[in-house]
Image (cartoon, rainbow, N blue to C red; front, side):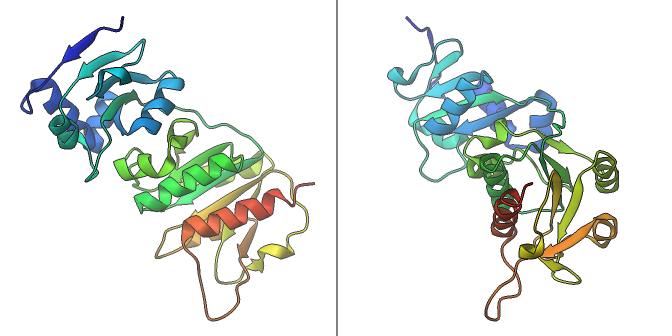
Length: 248
């Protein structure tokens, strides 16, 4: 039988400590992140990084982790959503190293948590080996975690200096591509490709001039009508899918 602890007070010291995990500095210091809802809790559990689960219903208890039976009010206090599910977990944040696979994604200043999370989820589905981040994005922001639907725990995401990352990848034989609206070739004009790194830029400013100066080619998505640009997450998905289909 699984042992259950029980907390009913909103002012309980442990609950107060868990609430602090919505602060980036606190998460980094303690190496823990809150995961909300059954799907994310199960993802963390199956990956072996779930340390604790808060449940309203006893049947949701899990073997091998600390199980705490709590009230719906406690779940609401700790949740970042207006209609939370009756389960919430605490997962360990693992330090990940860069994995050099066929495709590397570089995010140059992507700042919106929803976009960032969607990009991580899409990149995982399309076989990206690692994501390099240059910029102040809070990787484990609650909106990011939700948008990734668990992919945040699977994808190696590493913060690196942009110039250093690009030069390192070029030395290792990667073709470095950057999305741009100016002085760029159409994505469809790339006929064959081997291993590559794709740079996506900030939602408002795009890829920085420093990155564009270092990349091998600037690419753009050919569009009909009066549209000049796409959401960065959508543009990234189109580019990754198209480039993957051009492999030698």
